[in-house]
Image (cartoon, rainbow, N blue to C red):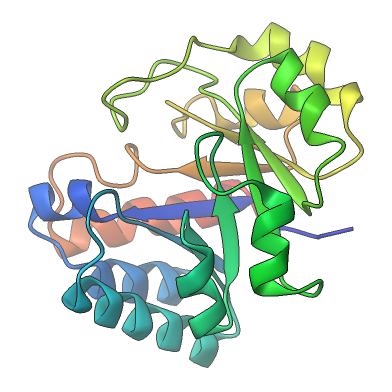
Length: 211
């Protein structure tokens, strides 16, 4: 069974571009703060430039002994020797395994009880569940899960469960208490202001909070 760090930051390239911070710079700050896993999420066309950025962030993770997770793209994960995170509309986990092989770490997003139940039959190492709260990091988010439903759904899987969606430092401990093994964080990390000092302080706070 996979063992995941509690703090699971996601480098969303669209949000990073909007904040004027590069994925490489953000990844470096997060790793320096103590993060031990980074997910690289890029929606839309994955150009050569984006691929090269993913390579650089992957290299940063390797030097820090952290896990690099590629979102959506099994082919890129294979090229980089990285872990993979899949959504409900991505390549099915069984097919991704054919690309990656049996040893790579694979995560899978779920949004409700039926999807969580179905995920039990998939060849994955951890399951993400959300959005736990309202989120602005997706243009068309799924219905909110909430803490009570998280408590209800937690016993349905023995795999590590990553909570995602609208989780902030003020409610993070409640999410862990409700059964999450790890918390994926996007919006609260990259809130305004997103200058280097403010971002570094938030990253350090998250690492200390979930230590």
